[in-house]
Image 1 (cartoon, one colour):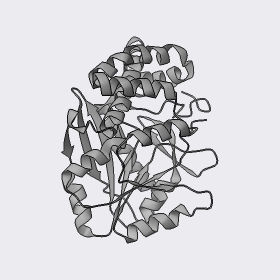
Image 2 (cartoon, one colour; image 1 turned 60 degrees about the vertical axis):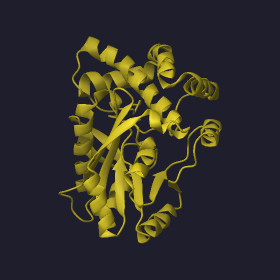
Image 3 (cartoon, one colour; image 1 turned 90 degrees about the vertical axis):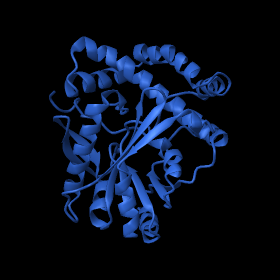
Image 4 (cartoon, one colour; image 1 turned 135 degrees about the vertical axis):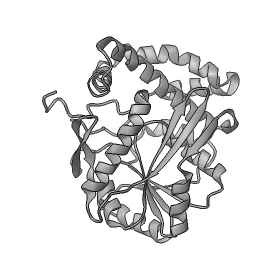
Length: 296
């Protein structure tokens, strides 16, 4: 199955150790620990290794040996984004720099005064976007549409430690009541944020080619985006060297009203362009292309 199971790996003790190093010794010292942590995941999570290796070797085109090295590097970069998220949430925002590429698209959407939809992916570090948006002096409310299946004890610990978030959450419900919450937020001229690259068992899906091979995507975000008649922006927050982040915002074009597939195709093209520039920031560590059911 290529669907995500809704849970991220990690232990409460591991998070506490990193928080200690971040607060007492700095972000770069915490990065140093990742040399060993990334190696642990590299050795002892063979299924994740195979899935990530396939992405790097078959979909990104790295040679066999380079793809093996890139698997380790991807784990390392992923660990850095987690450390950065914890550090920024804990009040160390001034340790990081950023630049915003496409702010005019957000400004245009806000000027239309009818709300909008942001669609991101599990690439880079979108979870820290709020900390950077706040510096842009834009008056808007973001509502994150999510499935709350993270490990509760870790989530509770991070929420206790972090600054209070201004982002509101709309949790997906089996009775579809979240659709009413989404419509209410849009009626209030707010922004709705989805991720469009993970689906769950039993959910409706759409298909499109990503990096040259067919993959499966959740239908919900694209059906809603195509029907609500509000602007759609693809947004990514990508990590760069020296504790720097690059925020990208691109308005969806060439999409058709009530045509979810056209929105999906625009989204896939946007994700591909980001992945070509940042191949090590693909953080879907599962059988995304469903290759266990399809020929490679």
